[in-house]
Length: 109
Image (cartoon, rainbow, N blue to C red):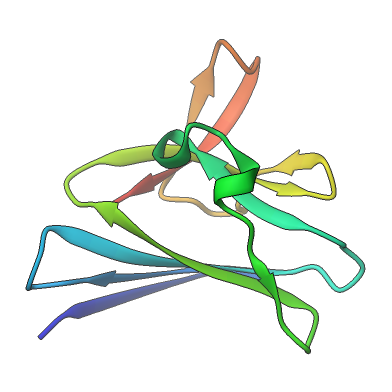
């Protein structure tokens, strides 16, 4: 059996599904962006590479993607929407990043 935690962030959502069979958490990112051409989630877990983290655009205009992340970690991340970075409205927390010169959203799994 698994535990599901759903966080709604206004228009964005993150769903965490912890697997009992292995030490990973399936994290589903949902970003409504009707007008956008591309949306990716970039962060520590993919070396900030948007080519490894594109979200799929659904018919309703929402972008969605699921990633398996090792548990007992925290990951800095941001959304990259048509080349513009943005944070999730209510991430688990935020952390200043000197390299980026801004705060990043943080995901705790």
